[in-house]
Image 1 (cartoon, helix red, strand yellow):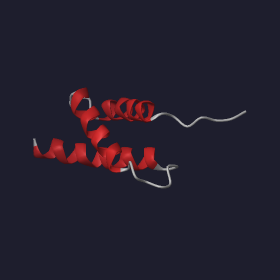
Image 2: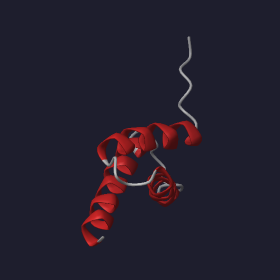
Image 3: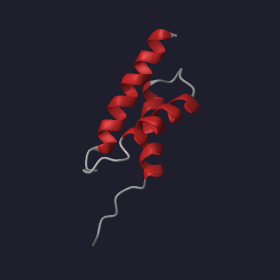
Image 4: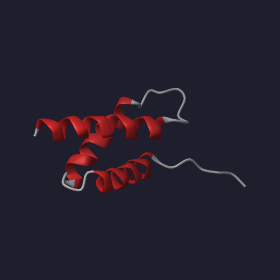
Length: 70
């Protein structure tokens, strides 16, 4: 049995869902934009194993900074 890695769209959706729970006052569109932009930063990553974790960590950091500035 082979295990297919999640698609980029599924990874982004999963991260947006988790971060929406963590940042309930932030619009989902804002969270999706930040996650999508952050995911794009890793487009050229040769090792894909930890991209989801890294994207979520960086997006969380960006959202904290945006919320602090607001």
